[in-house]
Image (tube, rainbow, N blue to C red):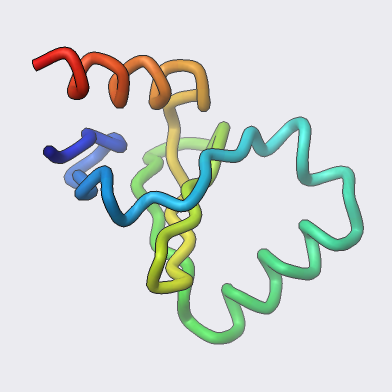
Length: 83
C-alpha cells in the first residue's frame, strides 16, 4: 500500500524506516548533521510546498521532507492497514 506524503509524493509503506517531527529532532546536532549530509549527497527530496513539519527516512537512505505532521502520517499508515 502507498502512503500519501503531500504534494505529488506517495511512498510504499514497506520502504519507510521512520517518521520524524522536525521541531522535536532538529534541535539535536546529530540530526542536523545527518540532514545536512543527506542534502549534500543529494538524498533529500521535498514533498512540502511550505516549511516542512516532518521528514521520512526511507530504506534506500532517501530523506523526504513533508508538510503533514508525523501524527497525520502515522494515521494514514494505520488507515492503510485497516483496508
